[in-house]
Image 1 (cartoon, rainbow, N blue to C red):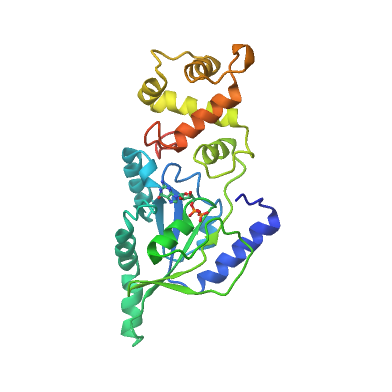
Image 2: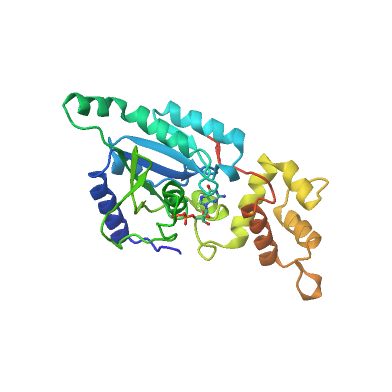
Length: 284
Ligand code: GDP
């Protein structure tokens, strides 16, 4: 489900998250491991402010492992704890608990010293749409609670999900808006499926992805589409893929929309392997 974000929705989403922050000890900021910066809300630091936070790089199963390691290091250097997980399969979830305890150790010790009875850690998941918030909640809860594709602005009574004895999670995540201003961010969000295909031109997204792949993953492209070498012209690359895969219109002309769709489908279904679309030290 796509959310059209207008200023009113953003203000409301922000207000809702701010309200929820009062109830919790720690924020789990979910991002897409393939684009950990582009998939962050642009105002996240301001919204979360000084609340303890863990950055969770979700969909790590689809990202390039080497690049994910660099991102974990990057966040660490920013003074943020970070962990890479796969919510669909439930890989890496234990680490979230370990990091939460580590991060809150001092706070909880102080509470105990004041005579406050030890209690479970209370957490809230926040992130832009499609980053996997509902999937993670369901995984942690070990049952189907969060409806995937929840919308902001639909408030319901808050309730807690118990995750073992030591963690309680708010059952509705904080849904925040993605970055809009930067065209390249938009293309990355589209390439990874974070925004609906109707919003951006599919050919633009495919061209962006191809250019990135030529630069960073040329061997994957070569083997998938049987290239011997690449032309400098993206149109010729499109032609080659379209011809190879039979994306043709009547008269034998290349159907560029169909070719673009095929490339994007291949990407999203991991036919091109695990790919990250941004690196901490890269310009992209
Ligand atoms: P939300 O909008 O943030 O709640 O996102 P959802 O939980 O609805 O997830 C969006 C899509 O991403 C769904 O198709 C999920 O199955 C998929 N997804 C979520 N987490 C993962 C993950 O760790 N790995 C993979 N491969 N897919 C995931």
